[in-house]
Image (cartoon, one colour):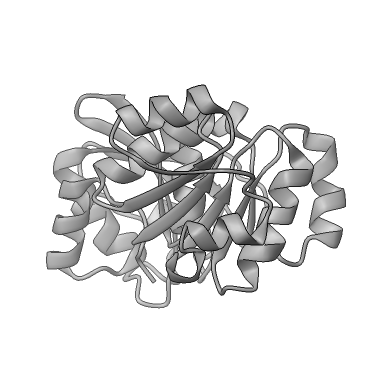
Length: 236
């Protein structure tokens, strides 16, 4: 996939690194000369300029991007970027640093697909937002352990099961559960799993593909390939 990230500061550059490590193509837009040099020294393609200007976005080939991440520290710049990028058919991700502003942006920002709080989520959260999909890596706990959030799909073998009825592989456990569009809570109760519900699972890498097959309905080949690569997006 191809991504355009506006802002080569701490959040933007770390997100670009994570995406590149997973084999994606990334173009950065930055107007600070020192940040431009640093990103280019790391081998990134960088367009120097104001990312909120349509001409600059076009120079970064926004028309061929799958998603645009507006990850600067300036909310107004980020919002403008997303409005422009949406006209090009891109998935748009808006960085926001103040939680109390979310309600305002949710109300007026029809051109924004997802808001992120880098201070809470880090680069891996920004990457997940850009990729979209039904599987999100939350954190690598140890060398062989990962926390992932999975969204139940219509193809999931466990669709209709309750939490107590789940039989996950050894070395994996459910940490949290949330109904569609509801907050995550501690697992429990007898509510049936439905499409759109979310489970946060701690799993050993060796059984992660099995977990993905059960909760998302990936084919065995796809689940093994994704678990092996660490990919969390592109699963529809």
